[in-house]
Image (tube, rainbow, N blue to C red; front, side):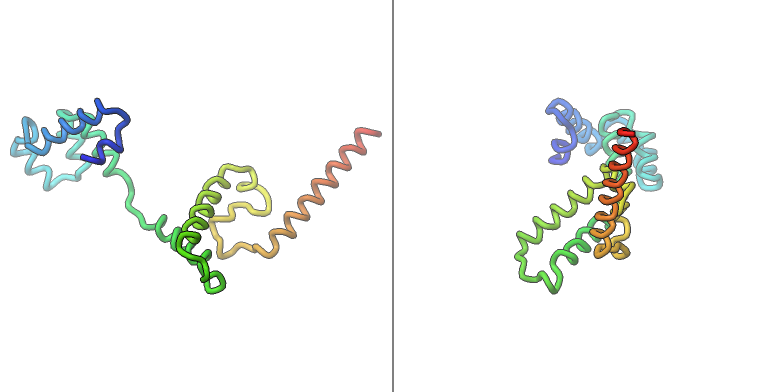
Length: 163
Protein backbone atom coordinates (compact mmCIF):
# COMPACT_ATOMS: atom_id res chain seq x y z
CA UNK A 1 0.00 0.00 0.00
CA UNK A 2 2.90 2.36 0.69
CA UNK A 3 4.23 1.73 -2.81
CA UNK A 4 1.06 3.13 -4.37
CA UNK A 5 1.80 6.50 -2.79
CA UNK A 6 5.30 6.44 -4.21
CA UNK A 7 4.27 5.36 -7.69
CA UNK A 8 1.34 7.68 -8.41
CA UNK A 9 1.35 11.45 -8.36
CA UNK A 10 -1.92 12.37 -6.66
CA UNK A 11 -4.22 11.08 -3.94
CA UNK A 12 -7.10 10.32 -6.32
CA UNK A 13 -4.97 7.86 -8.34
CA UNK A 14 -3.60 6.37 -5.12
CA UNK A 15 -7.12 5.74 -3.80
CA UNK A 16 -8.13 4.25 -7.13
CA UNK A 17 -5.17 1.83 -7.00
CA UNK A 18 -6.00 0.87 -3.41
CA UNK A 19 -9.61 0.18 -4.36
CA UNK A 20 -8.59 -1.91 -7.34
CA UNK A 21 -6.05 -3.79 -5.25
CA UNK A 22 -8.75 -4.58 -2.69
CA UNK A 23 -10.96 -5.89 -5.48
CA UNK A 24 -8.12 -8.14 -6.67
CA UNK A 25 -7.14 -9.24 -3.16
CA UNK A 26 -10.72 -10.10 -2.15
CA UNK A 27 -11.19 -12.00 -5.44
CA UNK A 28 -14.25 -10.07 -6.57
CA UNK A 29 -15.97 -10.52 -9.95
CA UNK A 30 -13.52 -11.77 -12.60
CA UNK A 31 -10.87 -12.62 -10.00
CA UNK A 32 -13.29 -15.06 -8.35
CA UNK A 33 -13.68 -17.16 -11.53
CA UNK A 34 -12.11 -20.64 -11.30
CA UNK A 35 -10.36 -20.13 -14.67
CA UNK A 36 -8.64 -17.00 -13.38
CA UNK A 37 -7.46 -18.82 -10.25
CA UNK A 38 -6.11 -21.74 -12.30
CA UNK A 39 -4.45 -19.48 -14.85
CA UNK A 40 -2.75 -17.38 -12.17
CA UNK A 41 -0.69 -20.47 -11.29
CA UNK A 42 -0.06 -21.77 -14.81
CA UNK A 43 0.37 -18.60 -16.90
CA UNK A 44 3.10 -16.01 -17.14
CA UNK A 45 2.25 -13.18 -14.75
CA UNK A 46 2.32 -10.42 -17.37
CA UNK A 47 0.13 -12.46 -19.71
CA UNK A 48 -2.31 -13.15 -16.86
CA UNK A 49 -2.63 -9.45 -16.08
CA UNK A 50 -3.08 -8.69 -19.79
CA UNK A 51 -6.01 -11.12 -19.94
CA UNK A 52 -7.67 -10.66 -16.55
CA UNK A 53 -6.66 -7.11 -15.68
CA UNK A 54 -9.34 -5.33 -17.71
CA UNK A 55 -11.51 -5.02 -14.61
CA UNK A 56 -8.79 -3.06 -12.82
CA UNK A 57 -6.91 -1.35 -15.68
CA UNK A 58 -4.80 1.06 -13.60
CA UNK A 59 -3.66 -1.71 -11.25
CA UNK A 60 -2.92 -4.01 -14.20
CA UNK A 61 -0.87 -1.32 -15.92
CA UNK A 62 1.14 -0.63 -12.78
CA UNK A 63 1.71 -4.35 -12.14
CA UNK A 64 2.93 -4.88 -15.72
CA UNK A 65 5.35 -1.96 -15.39
CA UNK A 66 6.74 -3.19 -12.08
CA UNK A 67 7.06 -6.82 -13.19
CA UNK A 68 8.68 -5.83 -16.51
CA UNK A 69 11.70 -4.32 -14.79
CA UNK A 70 14.78 -6.49 -15.21
CA UNK A 71 16.41 -7.84 -12.11
CA UNK A 72 20.14 -7.30 -12.08
CA UNK A 73 22.91 -6.86 -9.57
CA UNK A 74 25.16 -4.91 -11.94
CA UNK A 75 24.42 -1.53 -10.33
CA UNK A 76 25.34 -2.92 -6.90
CA UNK A 77 28.52 -4.47 -8.27
CA UNK A 78 29.41 -1.16 -9.91
CA UNK A 79 28.92 0.64 -6.60
CA UNK A 80 31.12 -1.86 -4.75
CA UNK A 81 33.76 -1.53 -7.43
CA UNK A 82 33.73 2.24 -6.89
CA UNK A 83 33.99 1.70 -3.15
CA UNK A 84 37.03 -0.50 -3.83
CA UNK A 85 38.70 2.31 -5.76
CA UNK A 86 37.85 4.97 -3.20
CA UNK A 87 38.61 2.97 -0.06
CA UNK A 88 41.79 1.12 -1.02
CA UNK A 89 44.87 0.25 1.01
CA UNK A 90 46.31 3.68 0.30
CA UNK A 91 43.11 5.47 1.31
CA UNK A 92 41.89 3.32 4.20
CA UNK A 93 41.92 6.22 6.64
CA UNK A 94 38.64 7.57 5.24
CA UNK A 95 35.62 7.16 7.46
CA UNK A 96 32.45 5.61 6.06
CA UNK A 97 30.60 8.92 5.74
CA UNK A 98 33.32 10.47 3.61
CA UNK A 99 33.64 7.30 1.54
CA UNK A 100 29.87 7.33 0.90
CA UNK A 101 30.06 10.95 -0.20
CA UNK A 102 32.97 10.27 -2.57
CA UNK A 103 31.19 7.30 -4.13
CA UNK A 104 28.04 9.40 -4.51
CA UNK A 105 29.99 12.17 -6.24
CA UNK A 106 31.84 9.73 -8.48
CA UNK A 107 28.65 7.97 -9.54
CA UNK A 108 26.84 11.21 -10.35
CA UNK A 109 29.82 12.64 -12.22
CA UNK A 110 30.00 9.45 -14.26
CA UNK A 111 26.32 9.75 -15.13
CA UNK A 112 26.59 13.46 -15.94
CA UNK A 113 29.67 12.93 -18.10
CA UNK A 114 27.69 10.74 -20.48
CA UNK A 115 25.83 13.83 -21.65
CA UNK A 116 28.93 15.76 -22.70
CA UNK A 117 30.68 15.87 -26.05
CA UNK A 118 33.92 14.73 -24.40
CA UNK A 119 32.27 11.38 -23.59
CA UNK A 120 31.99 10.47 -27.26
CA UNK A 121 35.07 12.38 -28.48
CA UNK A 122 38.34 13.31 -26.89
CA UNK A 123 40.97 11.78 -24.63
CA UNK A 124 38.47 10.47 -22.08
CA UNK A 125 36.21 8.82 -24.67
CA UNK A 126 33.82 6.43 -22.90
CA UNK A 127 36.08 6.39 -19.86
CA UNK A 128 33.67 4.49 -17.62
CA UNK A 129 33.04 1.50 -19.89
CA UNK A 130 36.39 -0.18 -19.19
CA UNK A 131 38.00 1.59 -16.22
CA UNK A 132 40.64 -1.12 -15.82
CA UNK A 133 41.96 -0.44 -19.32
CA UNK A 134 42.12 3.33 -19.06
CA UNK A 135 45.45 5.08 -19.22
CA UNK A 136 44.98 7.68 -16.54
CA UNK A 137 48.69 8.47 -16.40
CA UNK A 138 48.64 9.41 -20.10
CA UNK A 139 45.39 11.38 -19.92
CA UNK A 140 46.90 14.71 -18.82
CA UNK A 141 49.44 14.43 -21.62
CA UNK A 142 46.71 13.74 -24.18
CA UNK A 143 44.69 16.65 -22.86
CA UNK A 144 47.71 18.96 -23.06
CA UNK A 145 48.40 17.76 -26.64
CA UNK A 146 44.79 18.56 -27.54
CA UNK A 147 45.10 22.04 -26.02
CA UNK A 148 48.23 22.72 -28.07
CA UNK A 149 46.52 21.40 -31.21
CA UNK A 150 43.52 23.65 -30.58
CA UNK A 151 45.83 26.61 -30.00
CA UNK A 152 47.68 25.89 -33.25
CA UNK A 153 44.37 25.62 -35.13
CA UNK A 154 43.24 28.95 -33.69
CA UNK A 155 46.52 30.58 -34.73
CA UNK A 156 46.20 29.14 -38.24
CA UNK A 157 42.67 30.53 -38.52
CA UNK A 158 43.88 33.97 -37.40
CA UNK A 159 46.69 33.89 -39.96
CA UNK A 160 44.29 33.05 -42.80
CA UNK A 161 41.92 35.81 -41.73
CA UNK A 162 44.70 38.44 -41.67
CA UNK A 163 46.09 37.39 -45.09
